[in-house]
Length: 250
Image 1 (cartoon, rainbow, N blue to C red):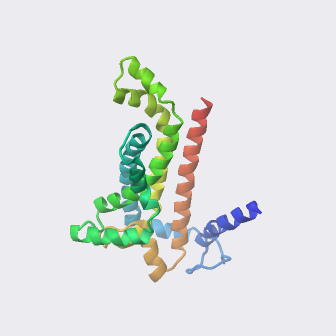
Image 2: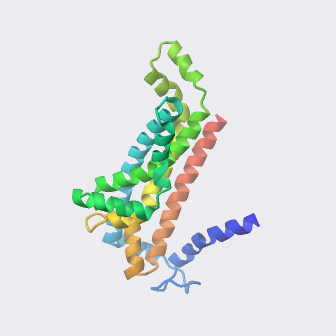
């Protein structure tokens, strides 16, 4: 029963592959023939390339910002003695609870007067808010398993608290932080709902571009782009899994 449910959930993703290889100018299943034309059409289209590059820039900046902020927040929650810690944690994890469409409308109302819609800064700020909760959860779980006595031992040998964290705790925490960074990158790169509200003609993510083409220009290029996004996600998750496995073996 479990295998059947998992196969049912994965099946739509698998069906995208033959749709992307279809040699007709419209999406149909089963495909009438196989071709790589739609992947070449994606790579040769200036609008698609611009959207992809913009999404990569936003995702890279979001990864750095969200991983940094989320890691510091996780350290504060786990190691610090903060007043109203439960309330702060709830606020930090709030973006995971608030519906994305509500968050998108709110961001549009705030960003529009500030002229941040369609800008790199606006997208990075919005996506960082969405990605930070994932970083906090992953890093906090890893930090809970690290014995604080290791830092205390380092401080008893003369290291300051920041040095003890940087030289002792952070190297142990690095694999979890890397995993959190991958989740932050994928959260930004795959996000489409919020991008729909804060995009404009000057700055458009690949998710927003896919929405537009679904409405006005539905071709197998959409399936080709979907296959590329799925492959990138699988490669990143596999890389993190391999790195963590090797670290555990050593």
